[in-house]
Amino acid sequence: MQALLRGPDAHVAHGPRPWLDRGDLSMSTGTITEFDGDGLFGVIDSDDGRLLVFNVWAVEPALRRYFTVGSRVRFLESGGHAGPRAVSLSTLDKFPASLPHLLQ
Image (cartoon, rainbow, N blue to C red; front, side, top):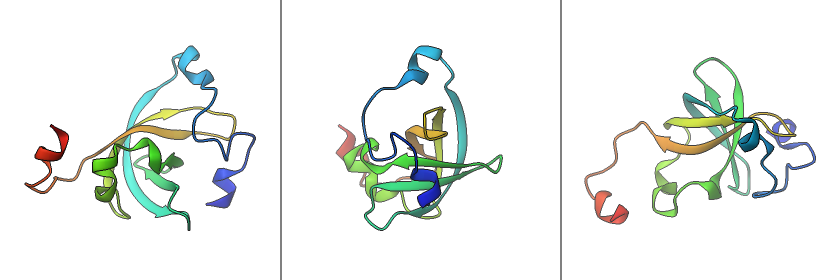
């Protein structure tokens, strides 16, 4: 996990996002494999075998508890100074029946 977080923007949750100007976003799917000790970052093992880091705070607050180790997710991949990142995450797992009221 630590190796994935190294780089000039490893500690920055929000900052310059040069990939938005380049237009190199692509949709992927994978499985959450771990979280760091502070619960700020997670790691996704993409279906094509790559590891990507994501910022937990980028997930909608009402949905965070549904992103756990083993959860199947869909995400946009973006390039960054510290390597590929997963952004705009959504779960592929079914939500409990009680969840829709949280999204209204």
